[in-house]
Length: 435
Image (cartoon, rainbow, N blue to C red):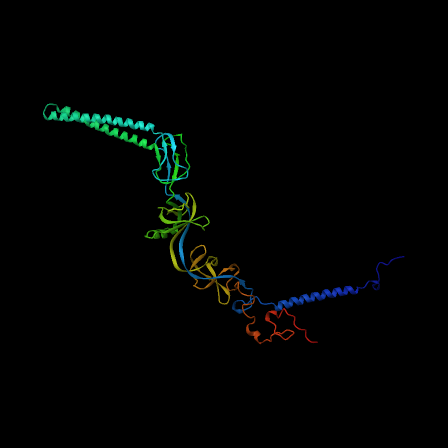
């Protein structure tokens, strides 16, 4: 039996009732979604009025601060290096066997304290020899003087030739020179004997010893036996920019001493306070700075030689300066500016002139008055005249939409005839109208 290639239209299968219901339901859902979106767009709350009370783009939440009057210190911050007031390498002045070490490494010694001793016997013998030579020459000098006195008496009696008297007088002078040399040699021997005791030339903290007892040391040893550094007082050396040299000199020329503070590397912990000492006499052409030095008493031993510290030199204090937080000051192509909060809750860009600054606040010398509020946070998203809001503002709390136009409208009521609050009117379903 032959099967036809295509079925006639009457033989095709018609759509079922279930398929028609599903298609109708999908169409109704699509229409409802479009209608709901249109209702939301028509009845949503506005973002807030823009400049002049007009409905504009959404406002930006910002943080603000008030320009206040404060005393602004003029300070100079620099990186400094702690330098000991004196550093001495203790070296022997005579050679010999090092007998004793009389100090402990790291202890504090006073000036003149004996640190070590060298075998003194050879220097004692040298002193005795010099003393003996001096005594022998002094005896010869005394005998020559007695003989000269006798010759002078005989010459007065015309009993001796004048030549003999002159010869004896020359011998006396010769012996006097010999005795003087002997005394110098004896003094040198005493010095060498005294140098066998190595003493501290300055007071300070001793470091690690270089040699031990029993070694033979000489006067030419460059390493010495120990290094002494003076820690109280102590100096801090730092660099002053050449543009600030005139100001520093003007302030240091007076009788008032400039206060200097030394902080650690975090600029948080204060290590010590001292006084400005002096400036160097030339400018470093490579860095454009001048070396300066400040002195600290260092009673608490918080400063250590070769330590890096942050130096803060206070030059003067500006009283009653207009100050704002550092985060409020911004930089643009036209210079420094701030965003000022206007009375209509808009931000106005205003050019200002900055002065002195510290970690927290900056001085404004022109362009801003006391009491004006400036934007400190959120300024990156602002432009001149942009609408702003504060963190404490409520949504829609900037004023009633459409002003007083809504005053003449009838208030909405619920099914029981009670008035519905404005915030719930769009959330509560309205009663169905009577057919």
